[in-house]
Image (tube, rainbow, N blue to C red; front, side, top):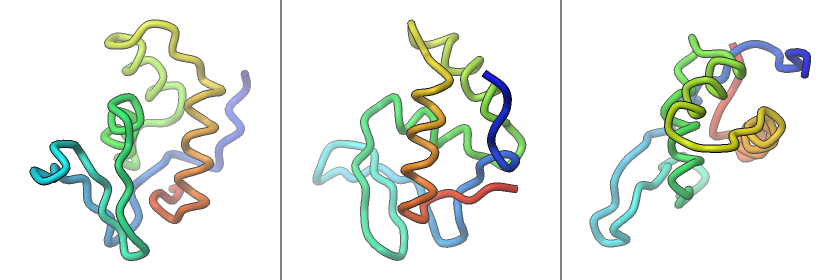
Length: 89
């Protein structure tokens, strides 16, 4: 699939990745709320550093997870963009 993104994803200002001991899980804290992502989504979010493009995220995930599909990563990133968790550089 050709690169269709407007750049590289990065966490928006005010967004933090954290661990919630009460929930016993990783969370995404952002001005509009809290997300409790699954482990794969959290792995994607950790790679949203403004330097790693979508193919790079897919390659990094492929080292730890079987069957990583670029379309799935792009779908997740689109949802995170819509929720104002990430932006593109």
